[in-house]
Image (cartoon, rainbow, N blue to C red; front, side, top):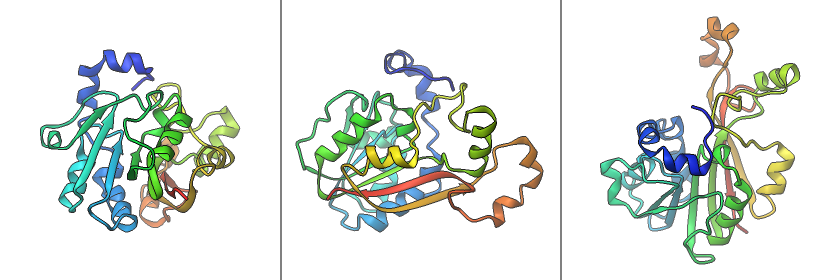
Length: 228
């Protein structure tokens, strides 16, 4: 869909509600759940899902045994089953998060930062509310895909950040270091879902089964960070 600023998002809740009812591939595939289980073993930890959309990740985490879960989003798009969890309506770009300093154990941000007008505020607020040792899991479209490199050379654009979509922010390696690693240490980087988003490669679908999930071929990149 096209890009909407925060005020336009708030005015289009009915339209966006329907779009939000399909969870991201990160959630449907279990990738975010697996990373959470690997790096947050204590099921009593306080975890925030930002932005929680229809609440599918909250449901998955609850079914996996996690107890202290809260969803956050710019508006309430929760499915009925997710309304059992605490929820806070909040603009991640500009609002001060309604948690005290060093009071939260983990924040999960699945396919969110690419939509934010002010991701730097978001990162700072996450750092503020996380406890020392707290975990920050972030996923976003992978800007380093080999086709993105070719497309940028040819047109000055990259896939998943084109004029017709609602992604407005991506991080080069240096900007990621300046924006994130000023406040966190990088624990690990993962990649997921092999993709070749170009009509020429549609005839070579078998490649998806044989190529590795890495920076060259994967649609998504996952960062696991920790507050010192």
